[in-house]
Length: 261
Image (cartoon, rainbow, N blue to C red; front, top):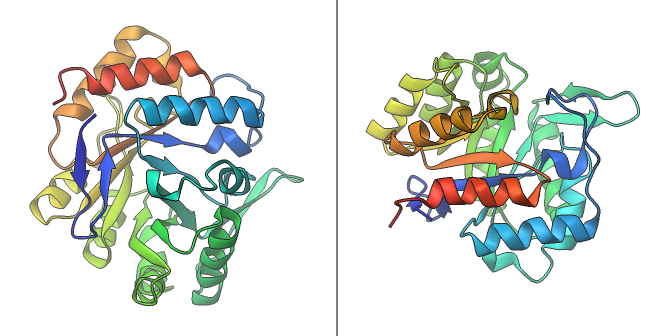
């Protein structure tokens, strides 16, 4: 597995990261097939496979149902083995299956504090603002990344950034933080110049939706094409992929570690 330094944060992260939306939420999602939430034994198995395959980055969020709470239990005593990335700004209501967004300094601070408690850690490795699509307003008017910078100075987080929805927001996020999470796959490459900007300016890039929320994984060729392309692009630090299927996880690890030194 390839590992790269995330900007100047001191964090070294695996090229493949494990997404955990499916650990805590199966309503209001855009996957092509319905799925059941895994039990603790099944999640433990996935984490063991991930670790054995060289994955050290786990991606979660308050918007992922009770994913943070479950990970807090599952990762107890294993803190040094993982780089934990979570988010702030979006919260999911399982009753109504809807999300609410709040980007005020108070809301972001409370969200980070809650994530620390749920995950049972003293510091969060990476915290991203979970955008509602209005990236520039969140950064310029709400000052959400400024809030994360302050929490970073307080020692609550090690790296800050934003999960963006627009190329303009991606560039702006990189100008105000350590990293950005952007959409990139064979059919959606509007954020390619954000990746290039990050590479040129020593900023971090995390990739989401490499398989277009599972829609591009229906054929082996679609999976291979997406992964091989991502592996060859300078500036990509980690690709976040989630699954509840152990065989799929092993397949993803094999494809990401093939020909890696």
